[in-house]
Image (cartoon, helix red, strand yellow):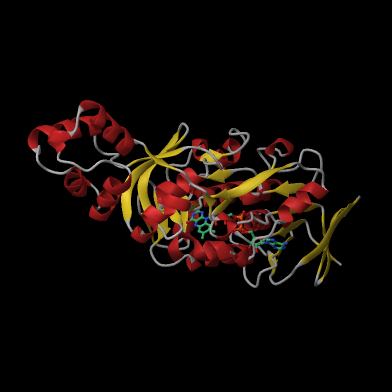
Length: 392
Ligand code: FDA
């Protein structure tokens, strides 16, 4: 039996941040990680360079049943706070686009930094250690592990979500939440490629690898960025972003010329390029093979002079809102995040502690707070980990 002040299940982004914070406050902290090493998702993130935060973080970039919940933690641990630690450890970084900060060299540096901070703060880390059961008595929480019983008055659940099971993702955090009487909102894959089926897939699959700038729209939400055609459907940043807002059956439209005012462009073509075929002209503003496919299946292909006004309207509408019928998503196998999770109604937004089980905390992706693509999810992991680490 080993006694600690804070017991953390999950040595990912949120768990390590919580551990180093509580350790720095003089708490005796242990992290239980069932994988053979900590921070596997950090290692694979950002193409191996870890998009560790975003300089433009605001609560508006997070999805949650309660959009206000994330505000307090995000305000008290900002991107600048994390950048300060990155700089203190001499890690070189750069902004790629849209405020997204990446390591110049490797995401290994971020894991090293977190582990060094944990070591300096006296945190004990048990990797390759599985949890068999979690119980509670008057003195606190008892966690039975493959290496014996651990005991602490504070238990932090930082097990992450369901995405990428081969990296160690489990539903264990949700199971613990239910065990202690917390609601878990339905989970689904987010930041995930969309799949197509039937004629839609047949018309596009041989264009796999082709990428173009678009604006993807689902309901009121839209994202402008690249779309990539894959052999199963659609991916690329704009599609990953919109996937978090899309549910099966929802209409999804793509503006294929987001930078252009389409009706005036078509009028101009009708005046200046009267004899040119629509496909030729579209091939000047879109990838040629894509323009060809559009005019084979979605748009008529004739010389511009032959189109009447209703036909031009139809062409403009199709280019501005090309309808996509997604059959589903690639699921947790390739999703970057899990939407839904532990209901924030049962948690304190300033400490992440359970409202009805004192000493029990939930942080990171296991909680029903999910960020956009671009460093927002790590910032939530850091901020929520910090909030719990300051309180536990
Ligand atoms: P995380 O998943 O990091 O950690 C949970 C830990 O708990 C894991 O180490 C797991 O092994 C452990 N665990 C699970 N069950 C357990 C059990 N029963 N017992 C013990 N341990 C257990 N975000 C971002 O902001 N920028 C980016 O560049 C990327 N890139 C990216 C790429 C890919 C491929 C993926 C899959 C995800 C991203 N993300 C991202 C998202 C980001 O990785 C994610 O939001 C955070 O890692 C969440 O941090 P957590 O600590 O909550 O979970």
